[in-house]
Length: 347
Ligand SMILES: Nc1ncnc2c1ncn2[C@@H]1O[C@H](COP(=O)(O)OP(=O)(O)OP(=O)(O)O)[C@@H](O)[C@H]1O
Ligand SMILES: O=P(O)(O)O[C@H]1[C@H](O)[C@@H](O)[C@H](OP(=O)(O)O)[C@@H](OP(=O)(O)O)[C@H]1O
Ligand SMILES: [Mg+2]
Ligand SMILES: [Mg+2]
Image (cartoon, rainbow, N blue to C red):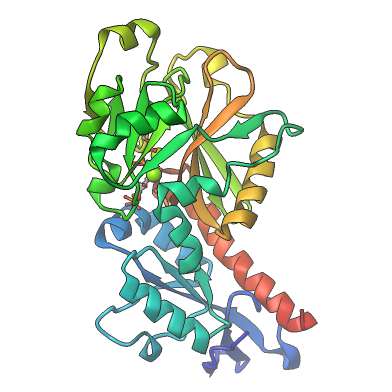
C-alpha cells in the first residue's frame, strides 16, 4: 500500500503521516496516522447528481475519504495518486485508459474491472452467468426466464419464436445495455405475428407473472439490501386472448418510489429469504467478478419460492438505497483495510 507521503507535524510536534485510511493503527515511532483514502471517480453528470449526494460527501470527509473527480481532458497518469478508482463510463476509449493505467498501477483498486462490467452490457451474457444457479437448498429456486436473442431480420422472428417454443407474452428488450435511454426501451408482445414489427438486435424474454411487485437486490461488496418496487402488472389469459400487437411500456421499477409501504398481498410482498439472498450475492460476486451491482428478481405468482432474475445492473441507483452513504463509505474503507492487511502479511 502506497503511503501518501505527506508528512507534517501537528501542534504537539507529533509526526503525522498522511496515509490511506487502512493504516488506522499508530505507526511505528509513535507517529499517529491521520488517515486519508483517495477515491478518484469517473461518472456521468447524471450519476454524480444521483450518487454523490451531500450526505455521502459529508460522511466520506468525516471518515477520511477524499472523493476526487477524474478530469477526462487530462492524462489519468498525471492525476492522483489514487487508492481506488470508481467509474461508470461505457466508452471503449475510457476502458482502454483505465486498463493501461491499471497495468502501471496494479495497487489501485478499480471498481469494477471493465471486462467484468462488459458482461452486463449485453442482455444475453448478462443472464448467461446466472442461468445455472443451484441454490435450491437455500430456501428457494432461482432461475432466469427463457429467452431468445434475435440479431436481425424481423420477419424471421415469429418463426424463430415458434421453433423455440417460447410462451407469450414476451418482453422485448434491446440486446445492448449502454446507459442510453434506447437501451431501456422495452415492449410487451401479445401475439407472434406482431413480433415482426420489432427492431433487432434484441432479446425476447418470456413474461413471468409476479403480482406486480419486483425485488431490487442491491449489492455493495458483501452488503446486500433488498427493496420492493412496483413492476408491470400480471397478464392473464383474458388479456392474451383479447390483445394483439406490441406495446412499448415506460421505465418501471427504477423509480425511487418504493413499494415497501404499500398495502400488498403478503404472499406477493414477502421478501426472498435472507439466506437465499446471501448465497445469491456470494455466487454472483464470484461469477460476475463485480462488487457494485443490483439484481431485479421476481417471485413467480402462485409459488412460494420460485424466483426469476430478469435483469442485472452495474453500479445502479445506490442513492435510492436507505442509508447508502454508510454502506458505501464502509465498503471503501474495508477495501483499504484488506489491502493494508495484505501488505502487512505479505498476502
Ligand atoms: N421476464 C419478465 N417478466 C415479467 N416482468 C418483466 C420481465 N422483464 C422485465 N419485466 C418488467 O419490466 C421492467 C423492466 O425490465 P428490465 O429491468 O429488464 O429493464 P431495464 O431497462 O434493464 O430496467 P432497469 O435497468 O431500469 O432496471 C421490470 O422491472 C419488470 O417490471
Ligand atoms: O437502481 P435502479 O432502481 O435499478 O435504477 C438504475 C437502473 O437499474 C440502471 O439501469 C440505470 O443505469 P443505466 O441508465 O446506466 O443503465 C441507473 O441509472 P444511474 O446509473 O444513472 O443511477 C438506475 O436508474
Ligand atoms: Mg431492471
Ligand atoms: Mg437494467
